[in-house]
Length: 512
Image: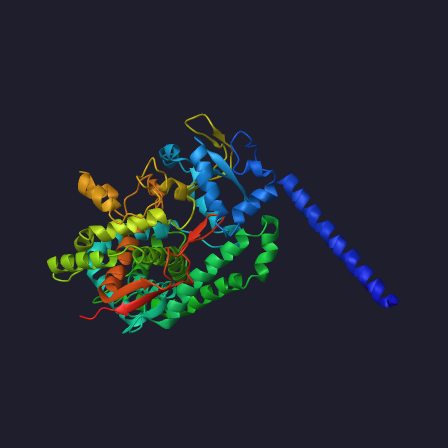
């Protein structure tokens, strides 16, 4: 068959262009590898070394079939000191439990939490701020200390949100629980973030939930791309563009509210709203990071990013656990009714404290299903650090703890792979210091909230919020798994260990 010369020349030209592009990419990659080679860490054991090549180790790490989880557990069980995992962002050093107290006590100029979080959220490419000094201050000094005062009101907000967002469910009804929980949590969080008048506004719900979803999706996509390609790649990721859109929309949504409040604050009889937006306005002059009303608006997006994804995923995993233990929902319902009767139906902080089985189930679910295979992120600074056993970790090394493997350690927990709803309930009964076994309590046995001064400051609010939502779901609905069989498997790849947001549960309203 005759091939037209013009077509042949065109094909040759295309081939030459393709070869040229491949050579260019390969050259850039080689130069990047040579110029930005990290510090030597050959003295630290390497996970998956028997696989033979970096590409095979990266394939194992990024597999969507749970291979990274198996790798973390295997390496944790056989290594007595630190070890490392190869990622696209370089080697991540894994910290065993015996070194956590040493690491948490070091100064920020030795090991830094914020520097590690910036890597985690791909800040270099996304410009996302994982946290801020003022936000941490507001959560610790204003939000947490107000829980005794606002908890009964949050209970009403949770009751109303569950009533408005859940279908009637007069018969067994299949519901994507993650989708519903995201909206419920946005409303309940918003009640204290921006007040009861605005938290149910569809624009606010769209902003807080959409920003969270698109920000995390953008981070996950970028993390799967080689670093040298990320600056270019971000421009073709739709979620990256939407982050900027949310930032413009929140300015338009909250700008008039802030201006109206500021004008009202000049009146002598003004009754200030009791919410985080107002607390931010009251203290803005003390923080250099707040230079304008727009900065106050953007703080609300940061709060949503910190609050909604983690709380909704934790709550989804909790419901998946509840439905697989026969009789557990009934036992929880009985505890809830007994405690509420003792407190005349008021869901105070003390009432929530007395729901000890609910707290135990939440902690056990978090132990079995941490949101990540790793946690406690830290970055070594300019001098590196020497660990208690003499191991040197070079400067600018990303460190983390393999928390999922630690949570399943049989030396720490009896029957560690079994979900025991009464595990921490019984520990609280036996231990004189029963407080150390609560959901919010920090320790090296359950590390989802971290430990030390950089531990999650919002865990007290999150714990109360989850309890209030679960109370309303458990009191009002029978719940079953849609597909009979074992608990829905988590999605696991790289360090992700998330409850599957696509699954459905069956709900049926309890007839009273």
